[in-house]
Image 1 (cartoon, rainbow, N blue to C red):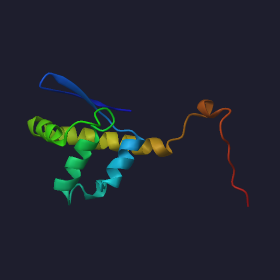
Image 2: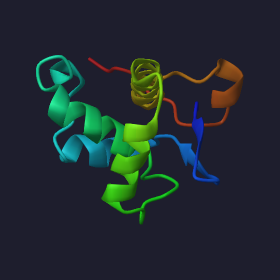
Image 3: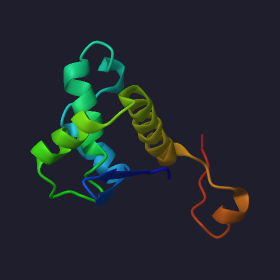
Length: 110
């Protein structure tokens, strides 16, 4: 999965999502279809959610401070959105046949 390395005030942060953080993000109300209609709600959720995998205990005001200091916000938000979609895709992605050997098999029975 993709991740973003971010440096602020000499400290490094790794922003990324996994299924648990995406589930949490959605439970807080994040809906990708509403980014255009509710940007003041959805954009902060998307940004803050990317910290939760590796920096869960980080205070919200520091996250907000970092967001305000970031240049090229639209590019960052695009990368975060792509990471979010990549995590969603991992839920339904098929593994290569060689990876599935000896694993669960299934069939539709009429």
